[in-house]
Length: 201
Image (tube, rainbow, N blue to C red; front, top):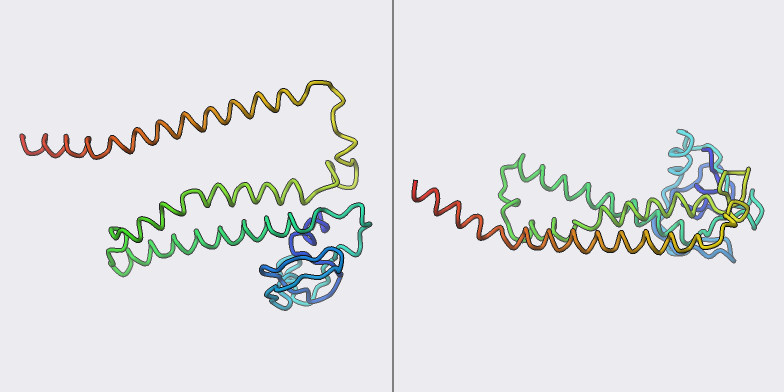
């Protein structure tokens, strides 16, 4: 593991230990150095990190406090990423089971609504993953070489480029949403025209 502090923050792993448990959920308490209300799978974190259920996993106690990533942010983002990923995998498996068992789920309204509701989940999982990546490496911009604060550009007015690009992306999002809405609204009319054309022929 090239960034053990990031792994420790992802799992809210405060203390170095062997046979480290994989944490599911939980609320990190950075002051008390513990995680409350978590489900723990003994040895699973050691296996995922080193391929050995008894291996030692470095905790945040091996790093100076000023070099700790924001544990709560990284941990919650990681849990969201993994949770949504597993949810989408489960939905995909449901679809293939319906084909395998020759069920008609894919034509049921409730099943179609599941896919509608799942549409934004992939994007949310992606953003949560980027949060883990970028926040998890803090305070480093280059791990153990350069701090983020030392890499900030001194060029004045750089914030305006951020505002400009944000405005561009918001505008594109609005345009794409409008076009998709118009396209979806046109589907019934298109189907009706195709149906009439088939009848005439």
